[in-house]
Image 1 (cartoon, one colour):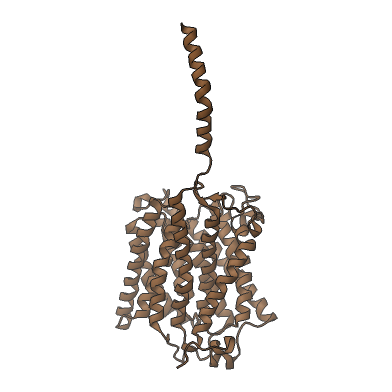
Image 2: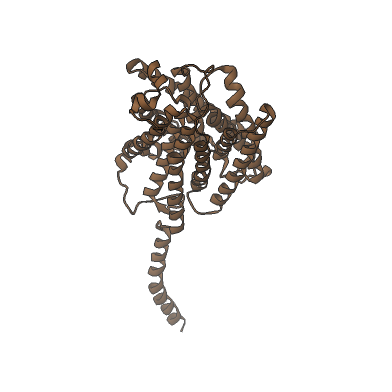
Length: 445
C-alpha cells in the first residue's frame, strides 16, 4: 500500500513539475507592464513639451523683440540635432555598460561603450526599466528628451549674440564630451564614477542643471557682454510669453521628475507631490524676496522663482519628503533671486536670461540639500543614515561636475572661436539676430 502511494505521488509530480518549471520561467522572464509603459510614454511627451514649446516661449519672451525667433530657432534646432546624435552614439555613450565594474575606475567609468551605437539590438520587444517593465524604445526616447533640454538651457546664457552656425557646432561637441559622459557617470549603474561614489541625483540636478548652468556661465564669459550691457535697457519684450513658457515648464516637469521613477508607482507619486510643493514654495520665496528688496513683486520674478524651485527639487524628487521639499523650494527661491540679481550686478557678467543664476545655483543648492533631506530622520525616503557623509558625497559630485564641465566647455569654445568665431558682428547684433541670422522678423507690424 505504501509503495502504491509513493508510486502515485511520483506520477503526480511527473505531471505537475514541468508545469511548475514553466511557470517559474514565465515569472523570471521580463513581462511588459502596460501601466508603466503608459506612464513613461506620457512622461516622455511631457519632457519634450518642456523644450518645445515651453523653454522656447520662456526664453523667447525674455529677449528683445528683434531676437525672439533666434532663441526659438535655437531651441528647435537643438531638438533636432540632439535627437539624431542621441540615436547615432549618445545613448550608447550614456548607457552602454561594457567594461564597467563596480569599484573599479577605468575609461568606462567616465565614458560608455559603443555597443548601442545606432541603437544596435533595439527592437519592439526590447524591454528595460528597474524590473524590465517597459520597452527600451520608450526609455531611449525618454532619456533623449533630457539630452535635448540640457544644451537648450545653455542658450539663455549667451542669447542675442552667438552665431547660429557656431551654436550648432558647439552644442554637438558639448553634448558629446560633456552631457553624455556626465549622464553615464551618474546614471549608468555600477561602475559609473559618481554612481559608485553614491551621488544622489534622481532626475538630473547634476546631469542637467549644474551641467547646463556652469556651461552657460563659461559661455557668457568667453563670448563677452552684449553690446551696451549693462547701461542700455534690455527689458524682456513679451512677459506674457515668458509666463506661458514657465507654466508649460511647470506642467512638463512632472514628467521630468515623476517620470524618473521609471514606473507608475509610489515613488512617482511622491516625486510629483514634492515637485509641486517645492515649486510653489520657490515661486513665493522669490516673489517675497523681490517684494521686500525692490518694493514690488514682478511677473518675471515669480516665473523665475517657479523654474528655480523646479530645478532645485529635481535631484531630490525621489528621496525627500514633503517638508524637505518645502525647505528646498523656499531656499531655492530666495538664494536664486539674490544670485540672479545682486550677484550678477556685482560681478558684472552678462548671463542674458539667468541660465547660471537659476539652473547653476539652483542645481548646486538642490544637489547638496538632497544629502540632508533624503535622510529618513528628516522625513526623507532614501537610505541615508549619516547626513554629513552623504552631504560630502553630494559636494564631491557637484565639485567634479563643475570642474569637468567648466574646463571642457572653455576649451571647446576657445577652439571654435579661433577656428570660426563665436559672435555675430556689432552691426548684426544691433539689427538683431532674427534678421541677421535668419532673414526673418518675429513681428511684422
